[in-house]
Image 1: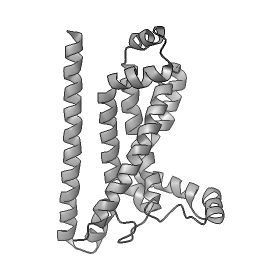
Image 2 (image 1 turned 90 degrees about the vertical axis):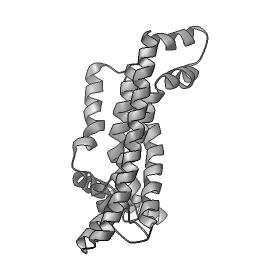
Image 3 (image 1 turned 180 degrees about the vertical axis):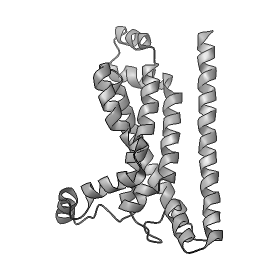
Length: 226
């Protein structure tokens, strides 16, 4: 059994999660403090990939990054690098589809944060950066960890957009999702079933992790209320 699809899927999901972690927290932190109208508009824009069909997201990425499009052509001519049909092309797709999960979860955590704690830190002469990393992030860690796990699981299971921008090449761009589809197309039900079991097992572990984090968060909230 060739384990490259698993390695490639985990690699893509890990890199995407790191990018989404910082981008999602940054966006959530600043947008949570904006006026309601502006926040509503930005929410629609940033969470749109969550409700769009993955094939639509993939098509939009191809329009943006394709070798015959302005951006893709410029990168190809300047750096000699293709932005599509490589293993790392899938990172663009997974970042786009996983970002809304991280952003919405982190924003919810920031909005529930007691600003009096931040104000207390500032009155003691602490900088906003110190307050953010030493006060706000620890208080919001359960929600942020849950968002990170959900983003990783979403990136790991992405198929539609990934198949359009990265394609399927065994040993080069294959992921678990695209491998299952290709095995099914060739009537290799046994091979497809093995990869389905692998994907189900990994997804179950991450969903269990999310449930445990949510349980701990609720228990912490009850403890704080007392």
